Length: 330
Image (cartoon, rainbow, N blue to C red; front, side, top):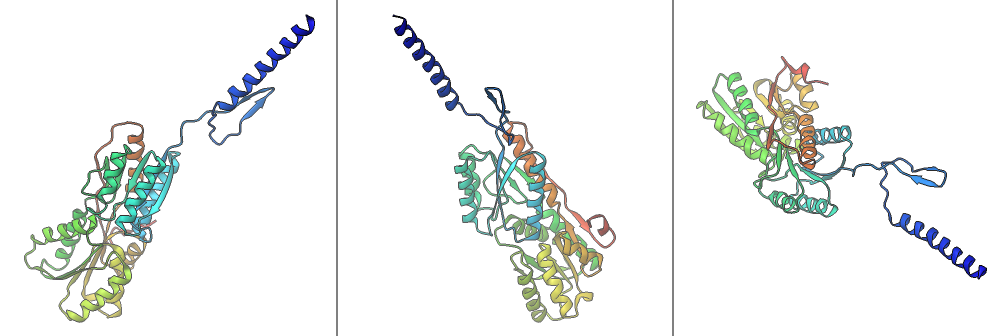
């Protein structure tokens, strides 16, 4: 009888120990990069909130201004302890849509989209919204409406540029305009803004316009062609971004014509600011890349946390000339 009681006791003890082990093995413990601590026989680990992950698809990170937006996103995300996964769309709307699909599959908490094209990139926005993932457009817009937009009104930059040219030329002269990537919002709106502004100056004539795809080398080649085709007729150049502005500047300097032609571009990248300071480039229009990137992250975090967010956060453009360029130089 005693042996039977001892055997039952042992079996009960084994069952208790085994039960504790299985309970512990099925329970997940989340840590925040801190090792679990052991005190005696008990094991404890600090529990953290779920890590916020934001997927980011950029237009083209070989473009200096786009890289500055990316830097603003990274810096703000680091301040807010959020993880960002950044993809390069490489000017391909289909690639950008695929990147957003991948973010959806990864179940990121929010998506920041720097759209390549206004219409062709719209399916990316629609897919994110259908999946219930907040999506924020930065710098550029899509036909499909995102949850929020952070950027600047591109038509404003063009108006600033045309007004500057008109003032320098006494409201009379011949203008050429370099377009960005066709179908991309900045190209569309800067073109619209320039043409609308020119209506205020009937003696300011647009004698040539063509895309150089936001690219410095393409702009150099295009400017060389325009110089040959319009000898002595060009009084001013409006390049829709600084990369093209710097290409046009090189062509004008190589031809010995810069002193006779007014040149303005948009974005205020480092090369353009230095050229303005040195008196080579007449002016650029400052676009706050860091503010746009940081603002997009702020909007994403608010949407993730179910907080109220502005549908549009607009950051104004600013004219930069030799008179005020020092305040923009780092």
